[in-house]
Amino acid sequence: MTTDKPTTTNPDPLIFTGHDSPDTYSAIPSAGQLPATQIHQMLQQQWGEALLQRLHVIGRTAAALGTPAYLVGGCVRDFLQNRPAPDIDLAIEGDVRAVAEACSTEPSGVQCTYHPHFGTAILQYPDGFQLDLARCRIEHYPAPAALPEVQPGDIQTDLIRRDFTINAMAISLDPEKFGDFLDPYGGRMDLQRRLLRVLHPLSFLDDPTRILRGLRFAVRFQLQLETGTRGLLEGALTQDIFARLSGARLWRELKYLLELSDLPAALEELDAWQLWPLLRPTRPELEALLAQIQRGQQEINWFHYHFPDENLCDTAVLLTILWRDSPWAAAEKRLHYWPLAGGRHILSDLHLLSEMPVALAKASHPSAVARLWESLSLPGILALLAEYPETGAITESGHYYLLKQRGLTSPLNGKDLQAMGLAPGPQLGKVLRRLHDARLDGEIEDKETARQWLIRQGILPSIQP
Image (cartoon, rainbow, N blue to C red; front, side, top):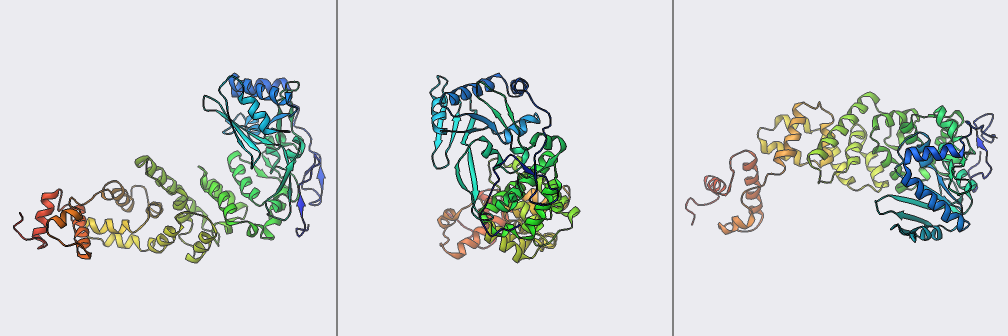
């Protein structure tokens, strides 16, 4: 298989089956026809009458403009599994803008937003529901891992350009054949057999991000790689195909991966797919890492529960856990490549984390403990807590810092101290730090006890006006 020439998806309704050679294609038999009447009934039962009528309106509007419309992609996949579809995507064979604007002229308060750069539109309904419309298209990849060149197409070419058979199904909204089910590549059968299959042999070379999307699908839907697809994955990895991706494209897919609620299962799949080099240079001791990741997710949830209005970079917590036993330079290299905000804090935390348990044990005052926690970023704190039991001393100390100590302030500020006769400058800052420590240690509570403390420390004269 050569990769030094332009590649393109195969427009024919045939898919790679993994038999004989990577160039072997074979038609996939149907998993049994779904009559349009059955699709219609299923749509009504699963999505409700209101949405069904909206789809009928779009279908009639598109047909009147000579531009057939289809439900397509992930929403069809989820519909067949009776799962809620977070996004409902429609493919239009003609003028997307004309269809969307015609639908928004209906006396139902529908708002249309058109994005000319992408040729897409959003229909926003008064109840907050929205539908996404896109032009059917053909994609051509001028080089491996390059962004595709796009041109208009029909529904057949739009389906073959997609990543996996389970996402290459459509349902017609045309009023004369509403509910017709298009499944030219056996996506429904693959769903039933729990198989993840690409549509053509160059799929992973054309777009390596499909590998990580496939991993997420495998976890979400409990799918196994089809034999031929696994061979294509292994072949793509031998060509170091991810090295051709920009840091932004790679990080976007890795971030989606790290945001999975079942991240431990996803990392087990990452291990099975031999993709650890994307996240760290060596394979970890998996059982221990998965336990820490699970604890990290618990700490993230704890933080969001107690501080719902405060921002936390969840992925920074998880990356810090993933990199705790990796060379610092490996983390630096990845953070330099990925557009991850807060990467500088991760590197700083990795330097400090190994020393923290011993330092915390030696700290003799609450203020000393608080200063240690203060040296870490929020993600660094939660990453450290993930290494210890939920009821352990270090976890209790970290939670106490976040809940109680972090919000404590000195009763006196810089203006108060200057009004008492202290000159501005570095010395004033040191006094403020000492006041803050005294508050943490319970030695002062309010302005009067703070003033008395300053007198006892010889910072203020004993007689104050």
